[in-house]
Length: 354
Image (tube, rainbow, N blue to C red; front, side):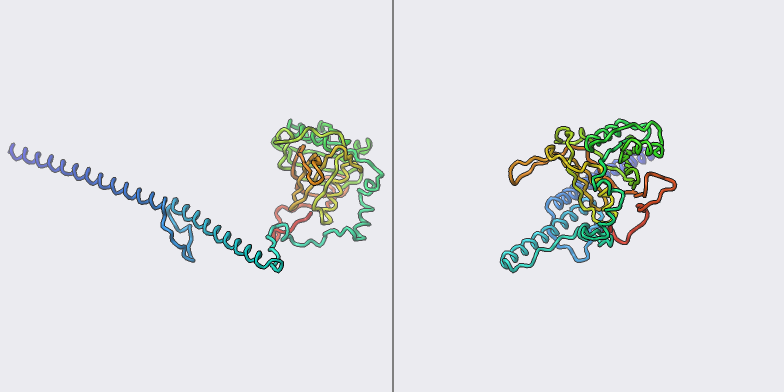
């Protein structure tokens, strides 16, 4: 019996040794196969075969992430080569035809594909001229009043908003910064009118960042509310010039073409004195593009008869019109000429209002 037990135990140990040896061999074989497959994949990635894409080819069908990325980059490269070859071919044809060559196609952009607005202003229109002669800004454009601006903030402004107001005061001549001190706008407006101010500018903030501007023309309005974004103060700008001087700047208004845009342009124009002082060589620009109004403040210098150098002085910011209200500020009973409807979806992105 003892001999039989010993024989069985020896057989079990031999079988276990054989299993462990077979497992080790299988592990080695699997590792070699994995190394070979990785090497082949790396070879394929480094030097992939040039295969033509079928007409119904979709890169998203490739499951391997590296392979999918490689095929996508290759697909983009082939498209770029085709486009470049077509461009060179057209250039050679144009050079061969000379003066008889057809005109270059104009690239499609949102600006030149803009839907025509019926309210676009014609400068020679008699109705527009009559409206300009009788609107709220007629006294300024007839040189009967000089602009005087009061700049204030929302309650308890932070340092960034205060600095923004102070820098705006250096851009707009005859402007004064006063702190709000908890007064309501309905109480501030009569005091401004009594002291001869023609504008009330209120800078609102959210989370220590300026985010809104209320511009009220006195004494008869209108009142415009803007969203403010992308504010850059002078210290945050690279390669800025020295601080602006006290000279009255020139004013440039771009792309205010509709009736609404014309009113907003006149609202901005009446902020500045009638006669700019060209000695200061300073320019304030309000550029409207896709209903966003970009403000920039530059100084220019004539290097020679053909070249002009410009230097940005700051601050810079972007405005988006939210509403235009008749009369002075009245949030409850005011009559609005225009209100931006945020949830109204136009049939096209090419329709603008200013």
